[in-house]
Every structure is written in C-alpha cells, then in structure tokens.
Image 1 (cartoon, helix red, strand yellow):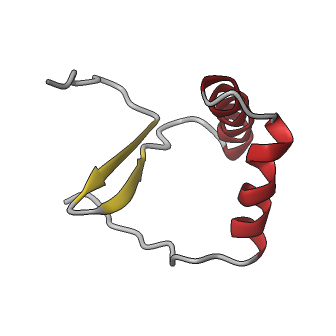
Image 2 (cartoon, one colour):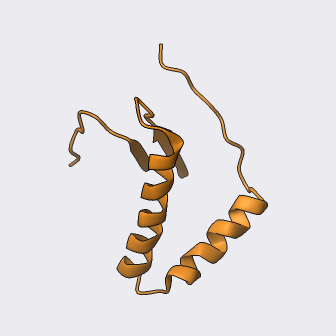
Length: 76
C-alpha cells in the first residue's frame, strides 16, 4: 500500500522491471536538488552499511558513462 504525496519533489519507482524517476521541479532550483542528491547518497550508504565513497563511485561511473538516456515527458 502506498501513500499519496501532495507536493513531491522526486519519485523513484519500479514499473514493469524498469526504474523510473519523476521530477517535480516547481519553484526549486537545481542547487536545492543537488543538496538533496548528496544527502540521498549518505542515506543509501548508511542504510546499506557501505561507505559514502562506495556509493559515489558507481554514481560517478554512471555520470561519466550513462547507461540509460534521459527522457522527458511533459504533463498535459
């Protein structure tokens, strides 16, 4: 069972075996998202009991050698 969020910033979920990310920028700028991305790395490292660098390494690898394209869907 899920919870509906009134004002999401970001949703990440699996759909038909694919990971999908929906971004809701609203009035926030990219710098605010960058801070939250860095915090997410810290949370992932803590939750999975690995070092932050252990999480940043594959992040950097994906950053410099993307394995998936970024697509954009505009709401109607």
